[in-house]
Image (cartoon, rainbow, N blue to C red; front, side, top):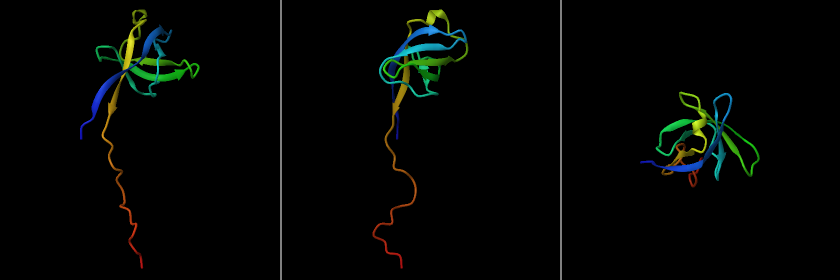
Length: 102
């Protein structure tokens, strides 16, 4: 079974913190902690390390992979890879419904 991947925009970079983390203003769905963030060319930028701010207007902190974020990052649109997988049945014991135990 194959998983198909597509990219979903999460927002745009608004700031680079003193520690070098990239701050993204989230638009719509907020990514999960640990998710990889990509630029428009599908090249990895970093990993989500924090989500903060008001629920109605959250921000996402991204730890850059490799080099620190730069002020040139401001305004950059960022994305996550979302994969939709075919649901699989849970493995385990089969139902014993209808089987009598004497």
